[in-house]
Length: 254
Image (cartoon, rainbow, N blue to C red; front, side):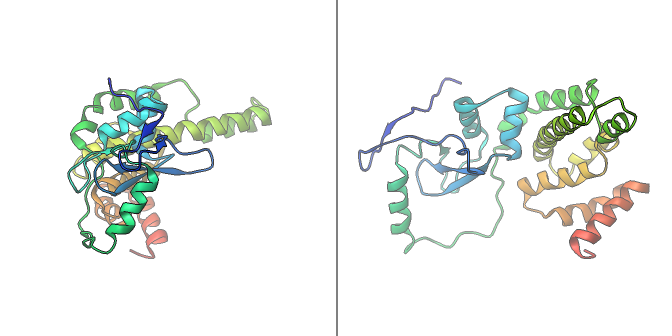
């Protein structure tokens, strides 16, 4: 990728210099990526699945990660791309334009639109699948249960145990984000079947199906409960029972 994001840009409107924001501040959970033409923006969370996937699978950080996000985001509803330089308009000017446009802005459509460019994301699928398989086949501690067994048997002291649990949580969180991105790419017709084929339920437990449904919610707008209610008939035994329990508890008997 040859593009770069300058650290300082002169606003084309007010001629003041500003610094583009390319990641959340330390005390913030997200930052806004603006359209290069209009005032629409997309909020990128620190733990957003696609962002986390680009970090984990491609090893991107900083400016490289920001540029990759620009590539995989779908165009704005106005047809232009989201960019970290906001079309060389400073945040102050964008806010002024937004206030001015509020009087004449058309009501937004209720139709859901996937925020990601699926054609661009599909280019990552081979690397995503490779990442998932490598992590599942690794010799690292794979489950919380195995850590508990080692701790209770005296093989692991309390400090080492707590460090291992924290490491496991971080590792699983990263893997789940990658799986959610994979679900976005595959879509509702294929995501759960791919999870079954690759043994994700055996490895992570039934909760991974909930994570997949959350990934699909990001790309289709369909709620997790709606998706799981339709999907549970495709599973039997304990998996179906656990899905039914989750739906009943979270959805109030949905």
